[in-house]
Amino acid sequence: MFGFGKKKKQISFYELLENQARVTMEGISKFCDFCNEPTEELSKSIKNYEVDGDNARRLLISEINKTFITPIDREDLFRLSSDIDDVIDAAWATVMEMKLYKIAPDETMLKMGDMLRMMTIDLLSAVQHLEHNKDISNIDAVKVKKLENEFKTTYHTALAHLYDQDDFRIILKYKEVYHHLNGAAAKCDTVADTILNIIVKSN
Image (cartoon, rainbow, N blue to C red; front, side, top):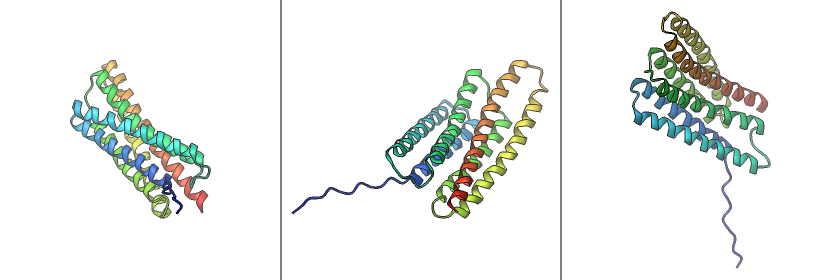
């Protein structure tokens, strides 16, 4: 009687992307918690999510390199993974700079963090539905882009108020932190654009 080994389970790139988007969303939620209560425990938790995000990205890239045919264009897969990872990277960079500059979260950071949280929730949903329900995925991606436009307004308004202050050192410190958060929002917008392009290509 011939023995046959078990067939290797096929890797789902959609599941890998979903896992990465979930890690980012949960990390941003922890960042929101940190803005409300900037403890060392929450800081370490955000760092752990940043590491988990890097590991999820490495796994996806490894599978791309080992797979001849992918369900999504290889370049789009790579771009999606990279930009999703950049969002949680920016959150961790923000925490590091806040600790380095010895500044506390302000109302602007709380608002920006909450907007980022909403954007990553919609991005996770867009990724979750990308394989089987592209209409929902499209709606979620468009919601992210609208939120990013609102974020820009918040960002520029915050800078205008910041420049009204007299302490130049405080201005520079908070400006740098706001810049990181604005970069995270811009990456969310880029992820949404890539998802929309994937949907168009699949029609």
